Image (cartoon, rainbow, N blue to C red; front, side, top):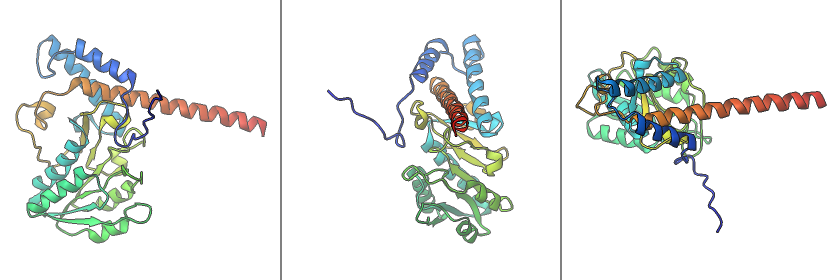
Length: 276
């Protein structure tokens, strides 16, 4: 019987064996609740803190700006709806694109029912949002601009840094859904000028059901979950430590693979140079 070939990594990617092993080790050895103050809890907290620091460094953030979530949809919903509700006293206008993931588009539709106004920008024949269109759509009451980093259908990479530069002197918060690009495209939140950035693990050979939301320090955001003081009181609920550790391992593996490819490219480049 022929084995099927799976290519739809834009929907989800198969979990890497090293990730599975890391998660199994954490489930068996780090069974403590990271919020507990006994030895098992402190050990689990150390693992959680290491992952938070790792992801923060990857995107040029500080540790306290990383909020672990259940994945891209929660991150996008929290960013879009949370930003709108927390900042509606300054305006009720939102700008997004017509090709966003449903996690953003349906969050915007929900907000429209709550009295918010949403401008859906078109894209060109290559699926790219025009920075000029963003500028023309901006209003005094615009409080949020949400443009995805990379499109999950056609792979178009948006001019996030240029849009971030445009918004530096405007009150609007800037969110990018980087679920499809994180781990594949190097990104620095300071350089990009974003206030909020969403990621998900299962696009880079990590487990499903885990991701993080970058929240720039000082950003007003209303979080949907209410309960304990996890994630500095922003995202209630015991953290999915095994999933988070798996996410970290997936990015580590991907970074090693990227490095190996660069090394191979440099090696072959030298060979070709010596021949020709």
